[in-house]
Length: 356
Image (cartoon, rainbow, N blue to C red; front, side, top):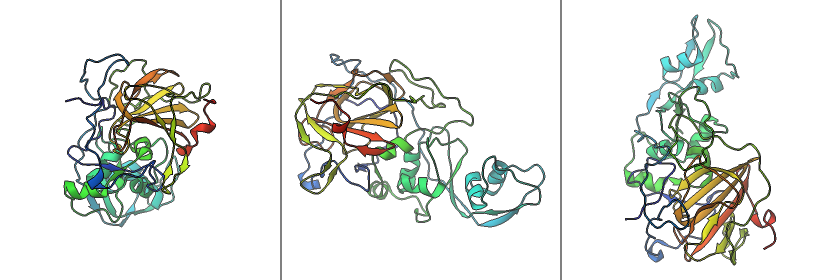
């Protein structure tokens, strides 16, 4: 059976995920009703370049750990700081997250505390982050949206979780672990979730790794380096007829990018120099999907790929083949779904691409 190269191995084993396009669940094209949906497209093939036909099964990159829903309930209380105490140590002693304690008491970096100071310990259910766990997988384990966890914990970019960090769960998170079916029904991921919650937790003080130039596995304890600025301008990822344009469509749904008609197997080329932020098939609506970080807060997305030829952390150049077009996901015909985002906000690609 053909298998897609996964560069972020999200631990959602046997969890039937559904996905929506970002921005309040708007979709690039309406998903057909369950009874009318076509049979699932076979998983894309992988290879070293556009001409490769031999199948390969490399080990997944950024292999994440299976998340166990073992959150601990902490009662709200008051703690009197003792000589030698640190905020991290108080968090470990009380079971509450040190970040949550800082927010509850209005503490700001470097989070200085004094002996005999009274600290409010916020109650709630806390999940202890283990090495390799991703934010998306943690959210899936509890059946809550990742963006809710982001909001409750006041997480900011670059959204890197730390091993040993305690994440406060939303108040309406199920008290008992939900069944696989219940979690699948409640959990959705989209492009924004992948960008903010797809990176495995790292050890305290882990250094940034320079981006690779070849598709090779990266250590699990360091994030991939990202470009700081956009080099040059954007180029067309494929040539073809535009099937749907950016913005509201006839059905009223919003397309966060453009859809370009292209025969199955057409090479998909990087629109600009960048680093692979994601390569996989966990966003169901898009099937085979690649996300490239170009610097200056620009990200490009390439969906419905039949084959993905890059891995997370790989450095790519403008025009480099990153995969082949197809009709995976919710595509009704062979095409490429292409998006550009600035500061995670969808931007009309036609305003950034040269005239065809």
